[in-house]
Length: 248
Image 1 (tube, helix red, strand yellow):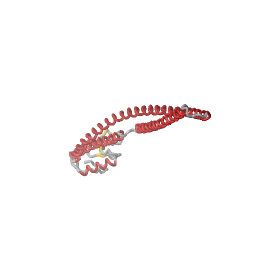
Image 2 (image 1 turned 120 degrees about the vertical axis):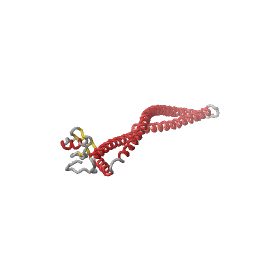
Image 3 (image 1 turned 135 degrees about the vertical axis):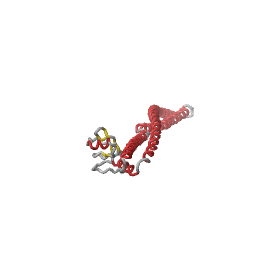
Image 4 (image 1 turned 90 degrees about the vertical axis):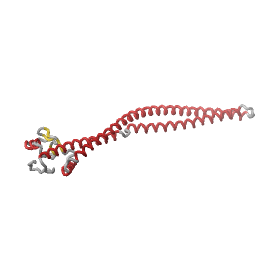
């Protein structure tokens, strides 16, 4: 066992068992890192699967354009009805004017002037009806363009979403396999060692076991004393004196 001033939390066992425990913990650490990566990627994909803001804004614009089309459809109908009503009034007055029933010349002139006034107002109503038609066509063109843009972007997003859904399924399957491996390994570890490993992972940002990179700690990158390097190479339970991670 390591003769160190710094007491290690792991269970004191034989040299052979120590090496086996270190190997198991290193494997467990690698599995946990992969599981952490899977969880992060799954969360990222889930976020990416929600409709993007640009698509939401486009949908809002489509709905607003639909409302505008509906408004001008109603307005056009009202204005065309006003034109039809005015035409009916003119027809009625002209029929009275030319029926021969009006004998008084002054009344005849008055009716004639009234018909002319009705026709002038009809021109205004027809202009307003034409304006409504033009605005309706304009709003319909805008709606068509917005719908095409929306559908194109929606199709792109749906394709991306389908790809992400397949990726999510693959991540779940991968995580399931990792968890099965993890369970197999944890069953082989002493309960105390597993508990200490979990505590260290929580304390050290998920990284409790690191490799020795030459003379450096694979966790914090610190240059290690020769004695520490030799202990790791001898298969002893050794922690980095700087960051406290188990070296393997």
